[in-house]
Image (cartoon, rainbow, N blue to C red):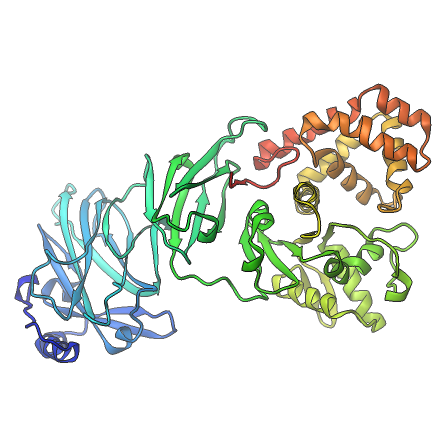
Length: 571
């Protein structure tokens, strides 16, 4: 049975149409089960696509305009909806062949002609392809009953074997559109309207349909980082009246919900940088993950995340897209942040307090920090000591511990808590916008220091080459201010804070920051006048040189710059 042999009379009700369709194809489908396609279902388990006709049973498309049609079984029919897509894995039988292939839905109202169907078509298919099409919105009034695949050979391979496009498997999955690749398989997904695409990755401007409630998923390819810290290469996107861009910075994946974009936008277009945009997908109807699972995103998106989109009232938790093991907490106010991190701050960093678990009453009236950062080793030491001492932690601290265990930042070895991989950083909504961006740069620099051994080595090298007077000034500043109170006998902590202090601002602001702002605070808190005059008289030159050298590492390794660790710009 070929494409033109299916004729389904039009009826007023969907159920009789389905009955007619099933009766027409059931006998044919029953003739051979060897051609049935197993369908992975999103709810778990498997369904099947039952073949209609020879090409479908053979699971191969050969010759001009050949069509293979399949009928969904009842398990598949129960999974159909506009928030899902069907995808089919196809593969040329021989190398150097080229095909055009399309997928469309068979409907209960189908009159045997493909001219009324929405098709998704891919040209110049030269390797494995996963072809996906979103189920239509009107599936209730005109049910989907199957799929039709059509293929045309564009170029034949040398040799005696007739090239064919093999039909390997199928699945029903959450709805998506766009282009991607995974494990050597090219993926092309289409929305309700279908469309045309090339098998090769787009090289010019590329677009895909979006809607409110969807999420953009973008993957960037590795490669040399061009431009400069002040003028980095960017991939630029537009969506209706809104635009955004990402700096180039190596291979990574990020996500951006549609509520950051123009609500009236119907498509997202890559304007520049498409050569290093490795994949661009939109997931439809995608809810945010559960409240106990961090949201993957860029630090700048975390700062701009609408408060009414938080999944809980007191704080939101993100996973840094460049370093997913680093968790970012944004808290409603300093009070929430203190309940999460104040005891930890004194345990890890405060001179005269480190290594001991202090009761709330002991810390009453003392200031921790307005932003925080802790590596896995420090977190493990804190929570393990609380376990050993049977120390009563607060509800927020216990929730933090459980999240760290779930994400692998902490691990269990028997009853002991030991370090895993990653870190935690935190900012608060109580800070002004300017300070939020400054604190995010500062704290995320600490995060990089925690996870990048090469960066730590570079910081040690630069720190060792500093003028001793500049080092003494900075150590004095760290201890003179009560709001800091760092334990400067901890070399790891000292070098880490030195790095973040000089890199939290753009390089052109480092000199004035040290020679004016920090010098004035240092003197006001009883600092050594000779050291202050040295830094002021040199215009902070030691710190400027250090900032340039460390920024060189950050930019060449990660595409980041002094004062900018996020890659996303929404303006």
